[in-house]
Length: 81
Image 1 (tube, rainbow, N blue to C red):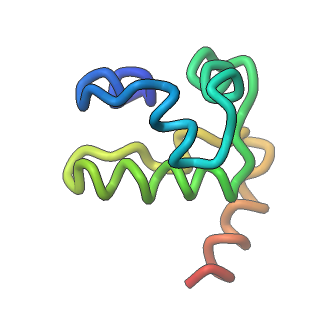
Image 2: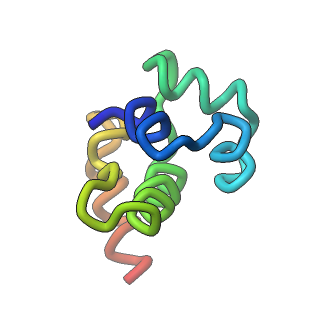
């Protein structure tokens, strides 16, 4: 499920989600449109936020990050445990 679909399904406005993540609405819009990728740390924040909203149908961080940064993400996730 894409972030936009998740947000609309759960009736979350872009402004609300952006504020919860500590980013601008413009940045969230660019992430949703695939113009930019979130950093691995932001991808984890998005995963945590969406998991709190819907534990069965959340957005996985690995679906959001740039595939070229997957190794960096895996290291970050280990450190955060």
